[in-house]
Length: 429
Image (cartoon, rainbow, N blue to C red):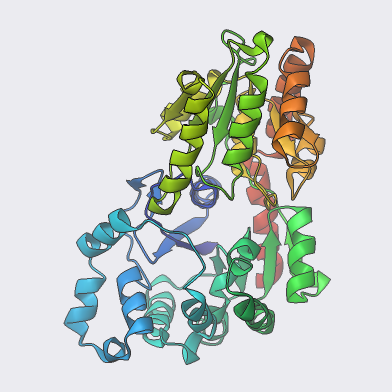
């Protein structure tokens, strides 16, 4: 089966679970013998900051679609100018300069993308459809998120193949928009959902959220968790010399970094936690830097800045050493997440989780047995839970082994890929 996976590229300045998900999935499809192709949108594909496929053409080049959205003059630019803005050097430059992941201010662009042929990027859509129809000729086209639904209708009609959409944390993007735009965008997403053949949510929790927001019929909704290759992760029992709390995600307010910092300050007031370290990785955007400076200032004032380590390298090789130095991992995302790939990566490495009782965190922790929950998502509640777990070596080792076994049994990428292929096969019969 020939499968085209269409995914957004990004600047590569922070840990991107979606990017890791898409890369692992396409590799798993290829290992199973399928002809799997990844087409990047906006920017060249990156994996933890490194360009992964120099040869892949980039559709909807970030520079072009921004200019066409903001300045009508550029909607009829000559071909040579489009090619210049879509060139790899130009897009790499834009990737290095990208410093924001904010939805605020991009409401009109989001709407235009969802309008598809009627939006300001209709020319880009024509290029994509032409490439799929005349060069790739796929059996299935799979988009990585529902914010790209505006392309479904034309692909179905002209390429004449099923179109599938994954779902992961799109609500975070839309709900961060100006309030007057939120309802408008959700209505447009719901309308365009009729053009898709199937949806695949990364958790049962998120399937429920999106089914309600988008009014998706049950027969179109599927749940397939995110998987990894267990063999790529080195298992070890939780570190205790010294004990360390880990954080792996973009270092920002939305991902709860301040909650973890404040909980760490509370723990360090107790002499029994004098050896405790806080180890942080996952990168940041330019927007995050003032927030991070405020957190460092608090740590400095508490006299414990020396017990905090920031690891700038979050490539797969660097993460092996990072995980093996941790006792537990905690990423207290303010509103929870649709999944959180870092959880499965930690479990595969033998690191137990301490997560808020929000989003899909309970689903993953209860099914794996590899962690504990706390409520509410406040520093004192997190500190209290960590104070219970960190000294309990028996509990830590039990969760460590259970988490690794769960990854092998339930979150193995090859097993989950087979579930996805079954969805494709039903659509192509």
